[in-house]
Amino acid sequence: MAAKAEISGRARRRKPETRLGLVRRARRMDRVLAETYPDAHCELNFTNSFQLLVATVLSAQTTDSRVNLTTPALFARYPTPEDLAAADPEDVEAIIKPTGFFRAKTKSVIGLSAGLRDRFGGEVPGRLEDLVTLPGVGRKTANVVLGNAFGVPGLTVDTHFGRVVRRFGWTTEEDPEKVEQEIAKLFEKRDWTMLSHRLIWHGRRRCHARRPACGVCPVAPDCPAYGEGPTDPKIAAKLLRDRSFA
Image 1 (cartoon, rainbow, N blue to C red):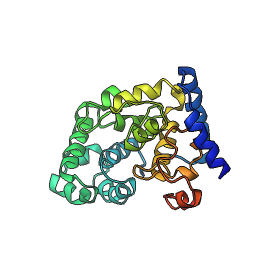
Image 2 (cartoon, rainbow, N blue to C red; image 1 turned 90 degrees about the vertical axis):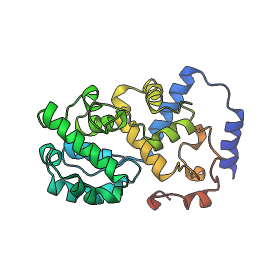
Image 3 (cartoon, rainbow, N blue to C red; image 1 turned 30 degrees about the horizontal axis):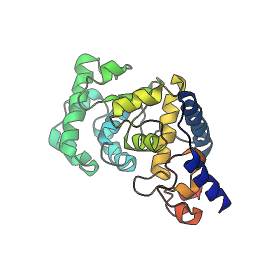
Image 4 (cartoon, rainbow, N blue to C red; image 1 turned 30 degrees about the vertical axis):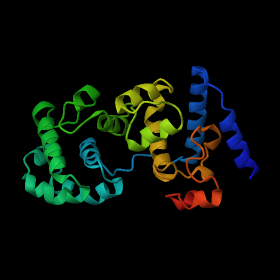
């Protein structure tokens, strides 16, 4: 009870934040998240950059676990960009239908495969400016591929990332590209990829859209949104998606 009151008191007493104060608070919160989620990583299964690119496109508006159940059959049948570029769209649609929006996604994955075949020698390019020229590939997808397949730092601004950084008070921007620009200024470039993983894990496991688990949040003392969800630890613990954190 005392700890809860202390956190609430801090939130009420929070003063206007200087730029330096924001940077320090953001980095302090990230250090806590690093301790909380030491195994944070991309949760899409892949063995090469082409598989990661396709899987990331398929992950739009669905879960990574659903994509992971779908891609083995897709990659077994179409292991290379050349194979997928020449695929019958109806066959691809039948395989990826569980991921939702399967017609649009089929058009994208066949189109990006043709682009890889025709413009990049069948290889996934390692530059953002090249990746975003492919059908269905935006900055978010490009940064996932760059960070996890090529080791090039990037910020993956998905719905979880955006929600969490706005709750943290790191930005008020809604547009993903503006969010990316704002958050990039708060952290060293070398930290961007792992920061993305930690924020996404936090959004999936604790900082849910409807009811964040504030009462068991490790960064609650520094979070201006503390109290949006239940603050009682026992109630909040029931909201954890991974019960190993309870």
